[in-house]
Length: 472
Image (cartoon, rainbow, N blue to C red; front, side, top):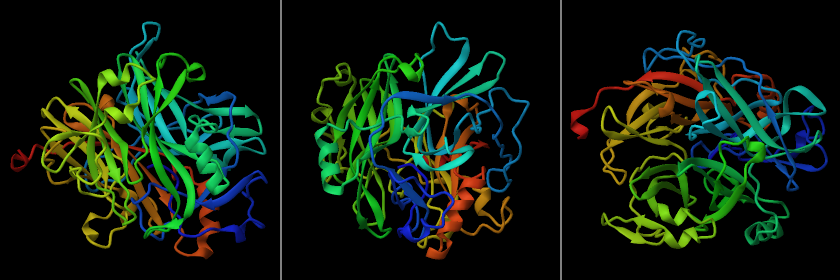
């Protein structure tokens, strides 16, 4: 999933002295991160909005820089943006937007009225925004998701507008919000005393309509090997039929995709033939998140009133597709642990490419520490090749930019094929901090508000290694 970090303990004892303490209508709990992608000791905060916020949208437009390049895919640290190449992807502090994670991107259909060469929607998880009482800086509480619309102008200039919901200057909220009157949201609120929320996953476009996967998230008692204080309870699919309009005017309809308690579609989508395929991660409270595969017929998406869960097919261990979401018999198509990844068709290699980050901390195989990897396959069902390294994340190496930050972890790696040229990939990932003890929690909270290099997508251009003939 997406967001700021994993925390194994609550931190109410710091509220009294914290300069970033939330207002009274917010509660302070563990900072969440991508479930199961991080080690059990990772800590930060999750400030949970106690009301469903509705109203107009906030957005920002002022650009700055943050792209990096990578000449040696396994050693070189990030550098300043490459000015010589057109349309440099970067994620600046905007008017009120100060960083978020996840950073899925979906190319949008070209608008006849648009002067941009290309447009994409960016889907961010938990997001730092400016608060009225703390102007010009990152402030708590953050919102659970935001979006951005990027444009590449004909002259190669990159621009990014970011959006979230704003009822007034003092009340900010996530862009995608559950309907508070829906049965699942009502039940979640009655069980926990707090409203549930969405974390966005991947998206796709069919016949000019944008679809976005949304994880249903609710509060829970700490559970599993990471003592996570939240639970994913299902997946919804947002439908936007007018994605070429400003997001302020988007007509968003949300349908239930799945209410399965352990198998969650949306890690990555791919449209192929008459189906949309969705990679789905498992969350069985065992610290692992392998991925299976489901699909929906495209015609099921033609009507927002269709019950999508009834049209799902699951790819099973016997190599066949079977009607229904079948958790017990679903094939594990990608066995590694990552709740987020990207999947795209590479026409030069005539193969599918999946990009993911290995866990920043792994006890089973230290050689996997801090790697961004890729796999290839002729078919979405696989077999997928063994993971091969693309990048050793510089921030996690002794030669990195910050050699003192031993509590840094990085995650949320994805490729963005619409910006990649032949023989290379444009990749984003996010770095964050975790508290190694309860005494460090307040320090982590403060540092995240002051370090603009953290909790913001990093952009790296890496060469794509030659095809390994053994993976054919």
